[in-house]
Length: 312
Length: 312
Image (cartoon, rainbow over all chains, first blue to last red; front, side, top):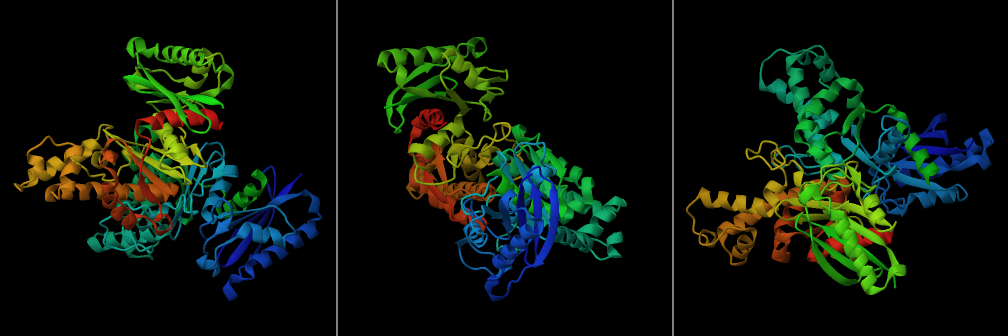
């Protein structure tokens, strides 16, 4: 059996995994992300951890390589431009640099959202489909496109950055990116809280959301209980996300959309709200795309990173 | 020198070209598209014409293959589902069928808009760029995505069908596709005429467009003469198309947009109207995409079709 390392770098911790070429996660561990000093220790710490694991397992000969997912735009050659969360502000080839620290081991690098998409495609909810778009509904909205089994990174590594599709040019509230009317202003966890507060402010109608902390989680709980105000929020969320997916389908015509991130933890119940508007606004030739919930959770990044090393 | 045939099938005529592997168009001719009897003669007529040309030129040994662009969705294997303009209503592998008629010659098939995009990428306005999106502004709006030098067809062959991106879900007027608020309702030649008529109806303001037949061409002529009403139409056109390109950029992050089709014949003057809104609505990481005018005109389809055969 042969193995690859899957490395998923976040601003607080780095998740590492040892994955075999069959797609089984054999071992999994974490190390802290040391962002001090411009994040100069991040890659050396990862290299040390990988080398220690190789020694521990005695598998030097059986490693095909390592893949690494990073919170920033990474192009198809492994060049990262900036990674604010890691305090990196230079443009360099991450893959080459980590490979150098690992004695020339084959290393592939990608953007974390794209890499998670590849993980879901390889061993998760996208497993039995062709071209796929992953939509990560977290604090923001991220995404990744898988075409012919590989990440579609785009020319500056921003392919699949669908959180900032402008749906409503005349939106009054600004997005974090500085634009107005981005998809993530409506479909992220933050967006759901915003829409909920708007509904709560718009009337005196009773709702269980008046008696609890408003969050994406409490909003979907209230929907489950049949709360009328929450259902209106779910419908607005579904309108924007369904419309957004229809637009994306018109560009890349995928076979499946995989929904991940915190908001997707509400599960299958969110799909009908989205699907109604997707079907309504999608061009007929793209309308049969399935919408499913991600299955790998936090392991998607590790699995996708390992896949990059195994595939190539 | 080696050669490929490039075949561009339209509802009225089939354009054929003989192209060398350096990208030079050596010879070019047309045959009628016989759509009667469910279009059963279309492929045999093409095969006869290709065989006659091979005999005429005496180049049997030097042919690498043929590419064919068709007015309908074609997937990456060469399967077409329907081609209304050719009166075809069955799903079959066009590439295999034409290859059989040509004694097993290598044949590649694609959607006509995608194939034209590949032509512009290979020898036209996209020549020195990486990933590209072509936008054809004709009676409708079509498009094609070129990724890593190849056509991105999508799972049902509708990749890059950007004319039917839904920008304005609450648009009152229906699009030909049955949806509401599609990009082509604003950015096609037909869309420009519609926007112009709206402006003419909205006031009594004088305009040279009150004294001529309204068309995309006469509208851009009026802009050139400084006609205030026409400039307002150009600004609305630019808003919708610039916004639409920003959305597309957020999905596939191309290096360049190439604008073709009848509307693009107005030339460079249309770009500032589009670019202003593109820059405003695009996510910052995708904002540097260039917007340029196509250069191959009607030859784009022949060139792209030949490229498919040469590339593979």
